[in-house]
Length: 468
Image 1: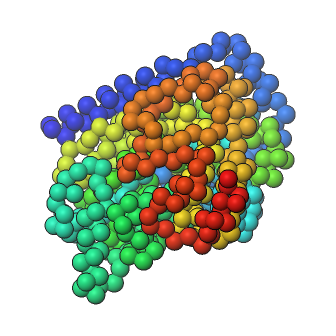
Image 2 (image 1 turned 90 degrees about the horizontal axis):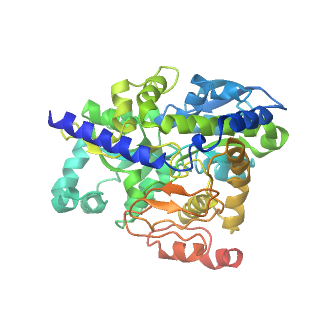
């Protein structure tokens, strides 16, 4: 009964907070129905390419694309969209690059990496729509968890859980002459890679020297943990809760706790595709915004769970998918769920706005970990990939609130606040980093200097010349 009571409490918190966020100008209700219909009718004229194929990875945050297809939002805007479930992020990247997919569910860092040629052939790629905030976690095997508890029981009692105990386990293994432990993340330029590195580095762990980090596609994480090929991983849902439900691992920390309300996935297209089909692109983004709004309403969340759980999408039990999607999160099989109403955010808090400031943060991480080997203008690059102009066009056509500036400092708000630099005020959520850091996009070099663990291939002096 204890678990059920807490779970119900968490869901009430989710419903309450979501309802509060939706009470602002972000809702379509602020625009008279006749005006909305006229705007939509005008925007769906001149669709250059009505038949489209979009790619997804089986994760809960594919929801905006799936909902837009299943609930008729794409059709409403004159599009006939088929969805292709892909096996890996590399598949997504390559198929969008060559035009086998018109657009796709992408990691926030993917369009940046594709544009810069990081880890792949250079192909300018953009996003005009962010799909969600949060949604990931770091899970470790039961055996490693026990070692961490034994190494530093006090640190393991605190939440958010630091990597302090893991550092002690690693140091003990070094003294014993053992090889580095193997952890997994989903892609070299993934949010997950940067999150697990950030978490480890905050405790003085060098993720390039003290552990072995490998790439494993999201649906294969649980099997690899069970087979003891890895001792832990960072992945999106439902693959943390799946390990918890099976009793083979424990989630140590969520990415909501690492950085509250960080942009997670985006809808990416080739830049030349967007230029060739501007009306089609705008219609797709309008449909995705509406789908995200629908998916974020508390009364629709269980239907979202039911839809995305299907074999053709996430292919996971509804009971597992709903664990994080309805306002609660469970860290361990033998623990009660805790309230986490913002674990999955699809629209509120300006979640769909592709902040160039957050793109700049991802570029700093690519620099920090040596993925970029030449100096670049970070802000210029971020603005060329994260296209707020395209988002604003779609938002204006729908009559919804949108930010009127592009560069937001992160790490300032512990709780709810209001974004006034918008066409209508937007209720926002917390944006803290768990280690107390702040990210000011006007002080990028200073931010990089503050990071104690880094393996850069570009000198800060050379970067400073282009980022004054």
